[in-house]
Length: 253
Image (cartoon, rainbow, N blue to C red):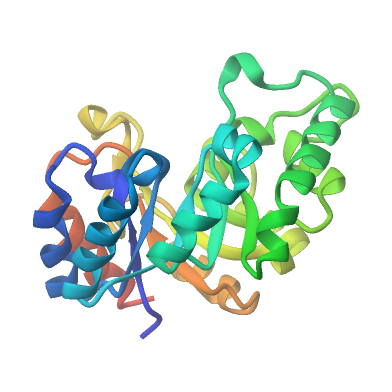
């Protein structure tokens, strides 16, 4: 079976993480994905403690999210964190609404900015890329999308493709995989609840209990050589249920 990871942002409301790691390991997850608030402010002892927690549970952290500010202002700090935790791939995950460009050229320039930000990461031998939400798939004035402009401006950017957000952006994930599959090095695996359900979970669902055609998507993604598959649910109400049902579904893909 393809190894399955877990984005720890999904468990941010179920602290402490020291209680989450054993649940993941027991269920069969092999790796986790970190996010900036977990480690950006940790000193050396804190980073060592986090690495120790992962090691004790047989988990690795090959991928992680780092905020744009840290990546741009202190890449040496980002690399220090990556080395301490064994991170192999760094993804910039988000751009606040008030900071988002409004026209094609500005999005292209943002791609160039990401390309430059990623240089010290790539030079250190790590993968660097962008993680999408839904706003990157809006149609711009020239008919292109922000995601296309980001990739045009950043020719060396890898892509952590969040398939469910592509769908929420009213785009076809199969078409995007076909066009940019060579960029995809990691995938967020999450599900969308049927319309009008799971309102208290922001419309998301445990994997295999929603509407995303994951069996077909996995067959296509495997042809692209994706390295990491990572479960995410933005607002789960029952963490144990999410962990157990999702990996059971993933094992059938």
